[in-house]
Image (cartoon, rainbow, N blue to C red; front, side, top):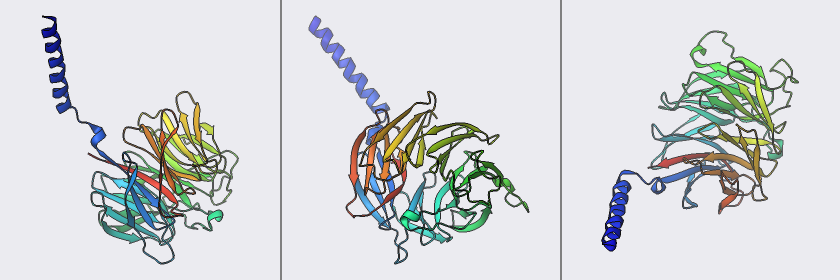
Length: 363
């Protein structure tokens, strides 16, 4: 009798597992791809994150003297990805499923970062900043270009009046664009609906009280790098590579809420979906930081393998952070809970200089 009960119990467990196994999808079977710009060799690498290997490299070589692909954004809704080429001034469009080239538009003036309005297929393009250590003088432009991504046509410009508008972030409803100058320590709130108004000048705010009131003065104090908005668009995060900080601002007033001091030159950032954790690469500090936005505590992983860490992106389940080491010719996988390096993916070609990262999950 006891044996029959055990058999019956085991059988019921097997049936239950089979039923739930059919109902609940196994997300671990999905393909998670990381698109990495290889700025030193004019290619974009595609990495299978789970397999920890490079699937392919895509040639983005338009000119003989170097194009310098810098940043990637993915339009999952419409099935495309885009990459900026700093030196040749192009924005390229690729098919997301086959990674085939579709179209391009040249805007010149060293395009850098992008903000994408997916529903309307509009791209906003920022400008590169001076980097003397890399022999790059940056762009003297003070404009943000607007691209109709559906046909890859330039449809407008926004002149913020400050040099090297680099950091850029778009509100979730696509109505407000936030931009920060890398040279003048000011950031700007741009209302998209007012762009056609004659004489319209976006609201501007000082990153610190110690900077000039005029955004025409390149004070070079804070050197704002990248911007990120929280999910409610109520807070703006700015990495300040000049002061080794992340500063958080109230988007309704432009006033500073708090700031965090990090290792040298905080660079790119990634915010968790629950708005509780902010990750930063620290370019001059060979490290990656994790800021707990609730407790305001900071964890850090520091390693010689993190040579000039540049881009970072969370995988969909946020268990891992993918980090590019621009000076180390590699990508690293960091566990977001323990803040330990899990794996290293090296590139075969020397001086690849991996920079921007974008993640796509193919179900």
